[in-house]
Amino acid sequence: MAKVPVQFTLNGAEKAEFIESGTTLLNALRDKIGDTSPKGGCHQGTCGACSVIIDGELRLSCLTLAETCNGADIKTTAGLAEGGVLHPLQRAFLDAFATQCGFCTPGMIMAAKVLLDRTPNPSREDVVEALSGNICRCTGYEPIIQAVLVAARANSQNAA
Amino acid sequence: MSLALQTFSSVKDANAALQAAGTRYLGGGTLVVRAANEGDVSTSSLVRVTDPGLSRIAVADGDVRLGASVTMAAIARHPELAALAPAARAVGGPAIRNMATVGGNLFAPAPYGDFAVALLALDATIVTEDGETPIEAFLASRDTSRAIITAVGFALPKVESFRFLKVSRVKPKGVSVLSIAVVLERTADGTVSSARIALGCMADRPIRAIAAEKALLGCKLAPGEIAPALAAAGEGVAPITDPIASAWYRAEVLPVHLGRLLLG
Image 1 (cartoon, each protein chain N blue to C red):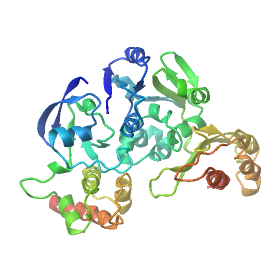
Image 2 (cartoon, rainbow over the protein chains, first blue to last red; image 1 turned 90 degrees about the vertical axis):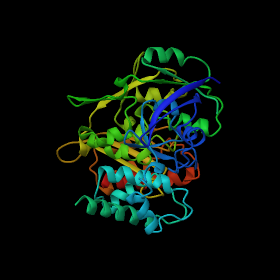
Image 3 (cartoon, chains in turn yellow, blue; image 1 turned 30 degrees about the vertical axis):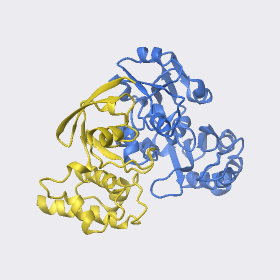
C-alpha cells in the first residue's frame, strides 16, 4: 500500500508523517505520532472517546481519515496542560471526581472545551447537550456535568 | 484496513473514478469509515471532492439549495433554516453533526437517516451532474446509485407548517425508535388542505405514510378528527427490528407518536 504524506499542527507543534492511505486520524495520532490521549472505544462514532478538535470543531478522530487533515489545526487533551499546570477543565474533573476509569475523560474534556470556548457561561442543559455524543459507563454523568460547570465558573472568575 | 483515498477538485473527475469496482464516495465519513472500521472489506477505494460549492447553503425566494457536503451542524445554526434545525439537531451528538453531511444522510440505512426523513416530507429534489431526481425515486434506487449527489433542493417550509419528531430511548440523544416529519398546509380555519408525512425506521429507508396523508385531508387537528389518519399510519410499513426496538413495538407506537406530533 502506497504511503502518503500528511502534515498538520498538533497542539501548536508542526507534525509531518508518512502514513498508509486510509489511516484514520485516531490511528495516526496514537500509533505514528504517539499522542495516546484520544481513545479508541467503539470505532463507530458512538462513544466519543476519540473526540478531538479540528479547526475549532469537535470531531471524531476514529471516523476521520488522517489525509483529509492536511494543513489542519488539531487539538487533543494531551495539549491542554501548560508548563505542568492543568487546564481548568482537567483540574475540575479531578476535583469533582468526574473521572473513574478515565477512558472517556479525554473525549469528554474535548467536548467540554469546545462548549466553553463558545459559551463561557453555559447552562446545565448546554452542558448535557454538549456531552450528548460522549458515553461514560462509570460516573453516571452527574460529576462530569458538575465538573464542566465548575470549570466554567473558574474561567469566568479568572476573566473578571 | 486497506483503503486508498482519492481526492478530486471536481465532481466530474470524481464521478469517473467512482465507476471502478469497490469504490465508494467519502462524505463526512460517518458511514463509510465506520463500515471500514467494522471490517467491511467490500470497499477498497474512497473518492472525495474538495469543491467548496458542495458545502454551500443558498436560500433565495423561499427556495433552499443545500450542497451535498453541508453538515448537520451548518444547517442547525443557519438563521434562515430555523424550521429545519430540529431535524438537523436530531442527528447524532455534536461531533457527528460536525461531520455528517446532507448527501450522506440520504444513504444512511435505518435506524439512521433522520434528516432524510425530513427531506422526504419536504419533497426534496436530488441533484447530480446527470440532472434532478425526486427524492422518492432516488430513495427507491439508492442502492445502485453511482452518481455523486451535488445538492438537494426544496421549498423552505414555514416554521408552523413543518413538524419533526425523533423518538429515542436515551436522552437527550439516542438512536431512533422512529422519526416522523410532517409538512402541513392549513386553511384559515385550521382545516388541513395538504399533508405530506414521512417516516423513519418504518422500512430500511424513509417512506411516506400515504394512507394517513389522505385521511388527514379536510380534518382539523383535534383528537376525534385525526383518529382515522392515525389508524391508517401503519398501512404499508415494514419496520426494522434492531437492538433499539422490535418491528412490532415500532408499529405499535407509531400512531401514538404521530398523534402527539399532530396535536402538539
